[in-house]
Length: 122
View 1 (cartoon, rainbow, N blue to C red):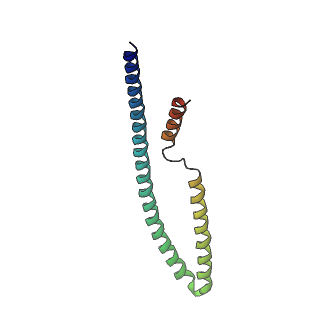
View 2: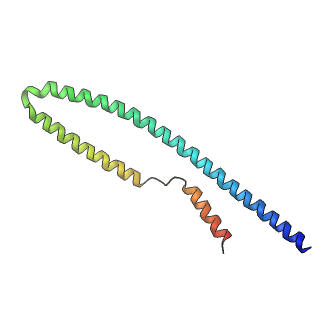
């Protein structure tokens, strides 16, 4: 009777462990797919923004140089360089602040693993 009870308990424990591992694997796969979709969308939009921004940058710089070269000569280049330096630094600052607020990937999986560990260990 005790051997039967022990084997039944062992079987239930094994089944529960397999279910738990299966749930964690499904959650991990789901989060991995979400990260992949999010990353591919971000890369697409970043590429498109970079291409449009570069074209606009070239056209506006050319227009400024053509229109204002006779009046300001080298001061125009100095002012444009200062403007683009400040703009670049602002963009870098904004990107770093946006990255500090992003949620860590696979945080739900890590939380579930933590909960499971707390439940299984005394």
